Image 1 (cartoon, rainbow, N blue to C red):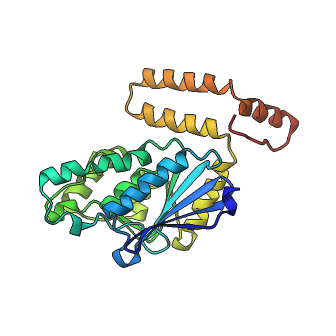
Image 2: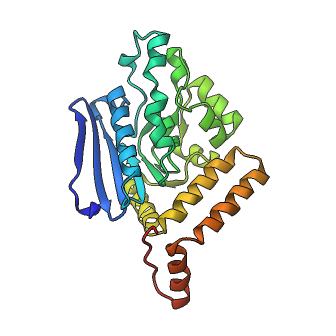
Image 3: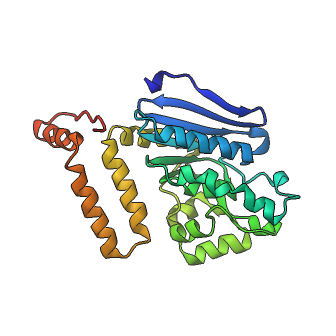
Length: 269
């Protein structure tokens, strides 16, 4: 079983990503660059991309946790790799292709955030479907301070999450917001004590992993696709996704288990 695998250490000594399976159906990716506050180097971004592609195809993985550990989520991009880069080089890096597997991951993704989620770290957290934040965490888009702007969704996802006024303030002033303000604004799904972040994220992942995976994927797809669609189009998408699930064995199992007053056993079929 996946839950019985030992953790994997991916990347070089300077750019490390850890992968483990803390429970059945749950994979956890941990950014591990403590000496660089988990700065998102190009190598680390490539490893994230590769693992999301891999985990998306793992039938036994039903939910993914993305975290930076107990001290910091990620304090932004790796500025040293951008210092002498010209516009053509930046364009040719096509970092949007590295982030696409995270953006389009069909499985629910939970970000477990402690400490700083700045710049690219904030953008990475916003790629998740659920954000569990510690009370001591903070979120920031500080790119303007170094003469640039967010480039991996920091303007577009942020305004959709917190609204125009708060997004403008964050992007134009580089002023961080506290975890509580992020929770009130709608950026954070759940706010817990710092020491409870990992356990809370795992508890949510455990719950999702026990649900029918095809239904979870259809719910995620319908919400994301419907967000920017006219209401009637979004409702049509929802109706078709709902009808599709009646062709699954998990639908039959779920309803029969409810009538039998027993716990269902979902197979993803």
